[in-house]
Length: 528
Image 1: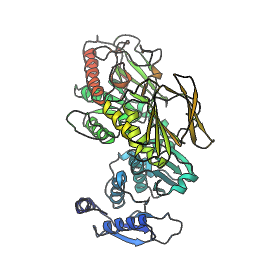
Image 2: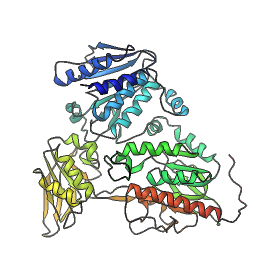
Image 3: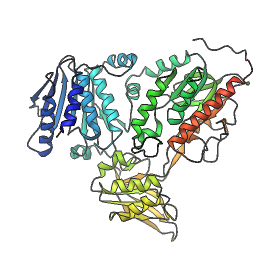
Image 4: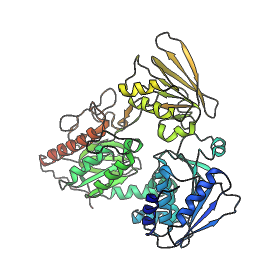
């Protein structure tokens, strides 16, 4: 199960245990049970603080394991064999159950401690999902802090009957006390926001009480992170507001064109970005969404940024780096069947369609890469491209065409997602050459047709292109004095991580240059 090198690494980690941990295994004679049994026994041999016992509770899933802290009584469960992306979740669960400190802010830990209801989470994952471990680890940390919170990771591929009964077609899918709580990536702070009804009011008050910023960055992706770092290095008061740190990069699996780094993954890159920003004096306000921007009344005055929770922040300069999101098809049935067959992340949700036919909408690099990835899992992939030719790189096109279970249809305009009321059963498209309407029977549809800039809140505030992109000048300046922009939300022609980072640095320097040339203004700053 675990090779010697991995055993050695794990044994080193387990030296950080401070209190005893009990592993309870629920297994039978099946192959997966024996696999889990071997994994648990190997872990038990690596530390004297770990004891292994056989469980007999018929209510437990088989195969599964329970990790219990002897000191606090906290419980975390893994239904299935937590390898792949979830092996890190298992290691952290062991460490946190054994008293190893959690890397969380003190106020977050206190907020979790103060939750006084019973919370039983069930989280369905696929072991190839790069988003799932973040959710599992967030819920497990909550369980380590507060014994009234419990979480079980469930490998959806192994517990297919549950997946079918609950009609789960996207991961991670989180259930709380038997009811659907969340789908897709969700952070610990976002979970707390949903559980703790007073969180919004507290956050709003804290933001309202903040002193005005010299530069306020909106967005936590590569452009926003780069902007914040370059601003803070200038010694000016810098703030950063983000709905989630990392943006689209968090949903990117393979990154192979980031100069000097031969290969990495989105979440790993985002972790480095966040750590780098936190090395500087940047006031980070995450899990916040901007609702409105009001430009300064006079040059040198304060720009006001209003958040959806009602809070208002003031700043001398504003840098918009809100990025972009997946473009939707906007056809009948898409919204109705989102998460029930309509998906946007092939890496996350692909395993749920094992042995079933699916479609990929879009013939660019993302679409063809998705088709190639899915072809190894599903029975058949149909690629539908609106244009008369594919737009992907030639090497990807050749690879896709060489695979026997990929069909490519060009001049195809998707017109409707069809289903039976519970899940997707197919789609219809129009042949743009003949005008004929055709139907394809499918179990899933993966939409890969590009990005939409996150700029709706700026309508009638600054100049946008007809596609909603912020129009910027050579220093990142927009049509409104004091407001700058960078990254995928702008009209920069190429949407790439490295270009967004460079744009963020450029716009931050542009904002600093603007600041130092401002006339002295008499407006007093907000009290600290």
